Image 1: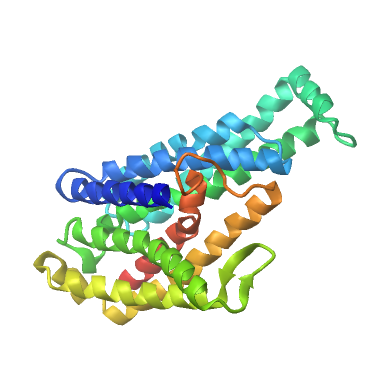
Image 2: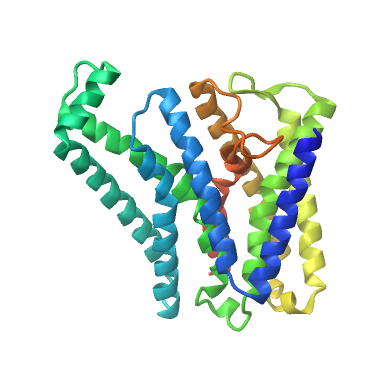
Length: 320
């Protein structure tokens, strides 16, 4: 337990420092942080896929977050400077293009290196397959690892830059809207996970999904949603007392904010359960050991993977 507490404190301090750097220096520090986290998570996801028996290009999966990091920066730069409202969509299309191109090249690489691929088929003792079929499936598994967790998680980079949207509601507000929205996106899973665990242990009751995650209770899931709403409501009111945020909060009513938070808490728990399904299929308790007391990086960010696209879409709709 002490290791878990120390690690949690280190994470909170790191995030606090990144917010300071975001406000006073550059958004790039958070972007780089997200990319590094995604690389570790992708490595662990690759290992889980291997345990499940889904053969893929391990090195491509691990390095993909770096490619998407570069693609996102290019999309953010060119699309935001153009003043186009749909720069978020264009950046996502760049990411999708990168995934498809790299997966296609991986397929060709596997087919061209015929001898090496056939040897791999023989080592794996795979029957009823051929060179093209094996290469296609391997490329498809690699693409799946690109999407989860890297592509979904790295949408946090777009949340980090959401203040650059050319919307009339955000005009002249600078970096401050993205500070509150990014903080909300980070807090929702954190609060939900913490209080879902505490309330579940306190009240117990019917299991949420006993075959997948036997420690989760329905009472904890409901408590996690309620407490995430309460804490984020307090955050909203505190930021409302800070002058630089008042203009933004004036066009973003608290009722809309709390609806986004409540749904986001449910999404966060679904994201957590999804990763539990993968770990159960792989026959492991933790995805890794990089974070003392927490397990692997994927264990730590599992609740955030679905939150990133949800928050990006929800806040974008609310600010139209």
